[in-house]
Each structure stands twice: as C-alpha cells, then as structure tokens.
Length: 312
Image (tube, rainbow, N blue to C red; front, side, top):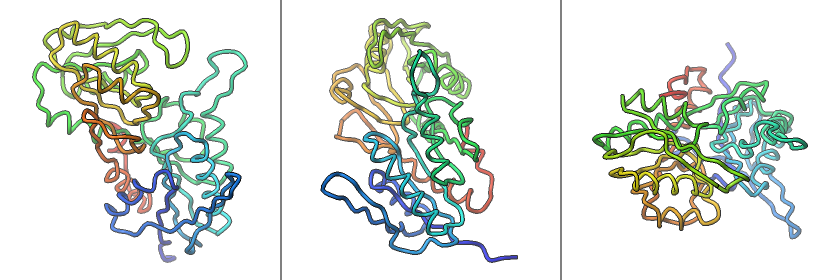
C-alpha cells in the first residue's frame, strides 16, 4: 500500500484569522502563502513551501470585494500547477449565493458562475457552510460537503435554558431551517412574512404565529443589512414577546447594520466567524466554527464520515 500523502492547510488573506484557529484545533502549522500586490491593484500568489503530492486545503470565504474570490482561484491554480495531489476549497461563506436562479429576465446566475470558476480552476472538493440555497450543491460536479452551523448553535441555545421559547424564521424561505430547530426543542414556530419591491428594502412585514409571553429565537443563514432581523424583533416585542435573540451563520453586516442592531429590540445576536466583524458590538457574540472545520478536514483527509455535521 503506498504511503499516505501529507495534508497542508493554507489561507487567503481575508480568512487567515480563521485558518489559524483551525490549525490550532488540528494541531498543525498554517502553510505559508505569499501575496504580492502591485501598484495598480493587481496581485499574485505563491506558495513558499512544496505542495507536491499533498492534500491541500485552502481556507477562504468569498465575501466582497471580489478580490477574495479571485485570490482563492489563483491559489487553486497555483496548487494545481505545483502538482498538489488533491485540492479542497474550504469556503465557510460562499459569496454570490443569493443569485441561485433566474428570477427575472436577462440576469446572470452568479452562484453557478462561481461554481464553474472554482471547478475550472481545479478543486477536487468543496467544504462550505449554510449555503443561502441548498440547491447550489447541484451546481458542482464534484463532492460538496455542506455543513450547518446548527451543530454549534443548537447546543448553545440549549444552554440558554429559555422558558416559553418559540423559534422564528425571518422569511418564508427559512421555514425549513426554523422547523428543524422547532422539532429539536419541541417548541412552536412563527414566520415573518415580508414583501420587497427591491433588494435590501422591506416594504411590508407581518408575523404569522403567536409570540406573546415568549422568548423568541430568530434563525437565519446570514445578516446583511440587518433590516429584516431588527424590524422583526421590534414587531415581536410590540406583539408581547419577552425577549428576542437572533442566530445567523454569516455576519455580512453591511451598510448601517451595526447601528440598526444596537438600536433594535434584539437582546443578543449570535454569529460565527465565517466572516470577520468590521467593528465590535455589545450585542453581537461570535461562536467559532474552527473546531467544526478542523474535524471536517480531518474526516475528509482520513476518509471518515462527516455526516453528523450536516444536520442537527
């Protein structure tokens, strides 16, 4: 039997902080990647150690700017040209995932385009977390390990030991996620029905279900402008809720998100470190996904099952 190939973990500049935590959990050193920037904004990547014949895990979330995605693509290309045995992209936050279908004439399907670029660049496998749309997995013709933050959030929610708890979905699209949590904790579920005339703008919102006298847990895959989350929390408190907490995997937090959260009725907002926070907040608490990703990398490398990390 041939000797087992080594594995190495590298990180793009945007997610190096997370890769260092992953390596600490895995008991290994983070590989060295040199990023050279030119005065016109162009950049080049180069590995400062051999990757020949190795399982190469590349950690990089692809949140804006698009340079983060392109840096990952160049790292993949460099690893392929350096004769890596397997190239596994670890993308905690998969950018452009909201463009998962053609919902109006003459628009692109950005998520499919990103999938094609990653595949063409040369990845053998993708590890990601809480995709905005589950069907994006089907955009790839390679194995996709789609992890869920529920394995981190659920135990933490249990530790809160909230009485009269109810689980809420901020929109109709998140009802499957909320229903899974509701079944786990054996509590009711409510839904926030919203109408948008354009992206990031909420024209109307209604709460379907009873929140009076309840401790509400709102669940979502991401917080972008925080408009939905904060408006929902304010409406729930007006409807008689005792407290409202939010759990969201990816803290995009663009625009006035931090200000809205601070001024909202939200008691606390729990997120992961899939994306670095731009500023601190008394209400925002970060739960690390590094142990989960470390276990997943170990499972992929040793050909072990990682299915326990897929669902609650």
